[in-house]
Length: 67
Ligand SMILES: [Zn+2]
Image (cartoon, rainbow, N blue to C red; front, side, top):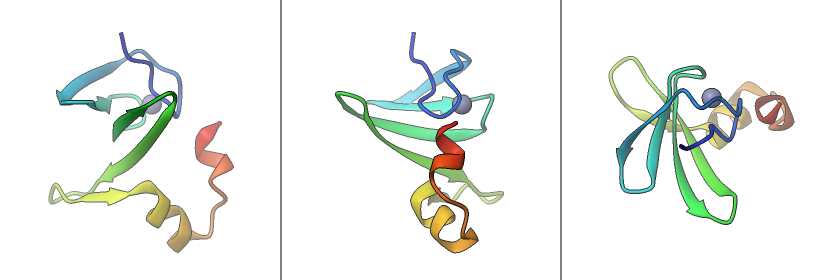
């Protein structure tokens, strides 16, 4: 059972090797091991937008996404 690194929900599904989708946040995230991960927002057309970039563009501190 993979916990979402953003919201800690267990409502996640595996979409690939080390890649999961959180149905609560509606984000995809890939786990690099030992707690490191990269989260992606899935755009309407299916494009993966790295959440880091999204944070940068919106000006919202990353801490807000980590809850
Ligand atoms: Zn989540």
